Image (cartoon, rainbow, N blue to C red; front, side, top):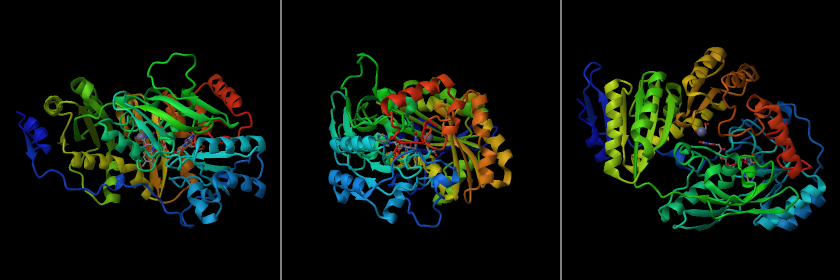
Length: 528
Ligand code: FAD
Ligand code: MLT
Ligand code: ZN
């Protein structure tokens, strides 16, 4: 007999525990969750001291510098005349945070950062760079996880951070137009004011730019519900390598006038052009959000619970995330918190977003009842209180930050067939043994996207060699993707061929050659 459900959902928070394995009796604990510090929601920032910064990428990965011009005082003078010397960075200490990525896995040696304040300035800079064969690394919020956002050698950094305005949000059409350097969370806040929601959400939202999201085709926590940015982005404005401005802005979902060139800029990681403006289709903000955090005793039951969630939650299911015990442990240890559900090998975070509180609660209850009766769900907590929803999400969203805090983290972001989704975590754990601190798997189960992470105290070449190319070979054998959402960047260029046939890579190279014949845009990235 199930007694907790409608009650706890309607009250906003409830923890249900199985009091006896044999009896199907569930008890609601009204004291619920402790208040966790939502540190993950603060702006991501890393301090760059000389200790702990990675060695130069060029040295660690033995990169031969491309045949690009070496920056001269005359070039710097020209750039300063375009953006102003106050929007130019040349000092070594200040350059550091633009040269090192968030993971501290790569370090470039750029001597110049430019912060243009308009599309015309971006265009003038690129035209000059193209004419003079100066390499450029476009940079958004620098939260990318594949070494794409920082220079590899001495490319100049073109930061979009001053192009940060929200230009319009239309309540009727749901279309938000903003400059590419707009911080995702700022767009989210403004969309909320008119009852809309930005169709992308991720743990880096307080730092990443919407242009950076588009350039990586970032996935995040709600792809299951809203799809990826190829669908939500209605238009872009991009500056090509030669400085030409390509206006592909559109206010319509339907526009079949020839090739959809905007898609070339979505996910091309700054190698084909610099996005300066974009239009996103924003759905109405949900009126009712429920989140459950569940303890599950086997991966088989994780899959069964996912299938059941799709069947019983249907159109209101908005997220289905999974964490293993090592992932949750990292989050709890580094943020010194407790989980409302503990002691299981797997956890699932399931979210619904709908328009009718009572209807959604009823559906969630049915789903939970069935899961508990069958024994597929062992334990859990559910809430619709906005503060507590955030607390539960932070258990999941903190995992990447926690793993980085272990010291160093090798990150893999792969798509795998669901039936064989988790086995690679166990195989890798055995393979690397004591060389690592933690091997763990978490991620967007609802999108077949596993985040496989190996943390250690500090970067180790021996560990690196034990993981790569093994992980990519394994993924390829399962016909998975070597990058589900983070992109290829610099760190995965060698492995693109594990997920794409040679003729597709050749076609990519031809497109690159057409749009950027001098190869000045983000060299050493995506294509080798
Ligand atoms: P950057 O890191 O600055 O750049 C990323 C790439 O895009 C680089 O190749 C850069 O050259 C290029 N680029 C940036 N701006 C432009 C532009 N305007 N025009 C052309 N090229 C440009 N990713 C996911 O997909 N899903 C997640 O759930 C997710 N969660 C994350 C959580 C954390 C804590 C962190 C640190 C990162 C996470 N990421 C996630 C990774 C990252 O891809 C996203 O944070 C984001 O999309 C990168 O945006 P950014 O503005 O920081 O771009
Ligand atoms: C996430 O889903 O948390 C991000 O993609 C970051 C990560 O892979 O760690
Ligand atoms: Zn992710």
